[in-house]
Length: 260
Image (cartoon, rainbow, N blue to C red; front, side, top):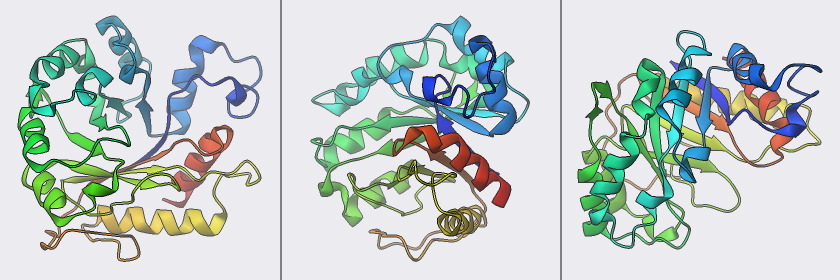
């Protein structure tokens, strides 16, 4: 399955552009979920949400829809990541699992100044559970320091079946190695001058890359750093239109869904 979406659903400039005029704010999630196939929840990085909120979001979206959830900063900002066990458990008990089968990957986003330390990062990965309260968990890390652009990092996360974000960005390192049973891309170059955020040619290119990943292949025109062979097997793919000129994110996501 290839799922394409946006980050969050509450954004004033989307009202009257993506959301129809007069649509109640309370109906924005259900509307967005009718046009997209996934949403990345970013607010959970800054504060926990209640179990009731997660359950409400689950019930307002159609079958097959998926949320990815960004892990809390109390976890990823630990000076010693190997000591994040209690923070991870606290985050998972906050209500995330109320999403049930609509829970997609948990995104652990690290600060640009966080450098690669194989021992400490390995200890962190060992703390990530495969299941919580009966719900299966999948994990993806977003690293933003050039020290991660080494084969040792790729091998470390592949051993744990943890994905790495491919960031289509001018600001962060790009790593397109396939290290898990799913692929996760955050596309951050949307432009307001383009009605669909990305140009038609760019959207065609990204749709083709998503199909390649989903079929079990690797994308040869993006940078990879691992030295091992990538097993060829079908994979879920998640692509989110994030940042850039955010007002165009929904149009970009819808245009890519049309191509898929």
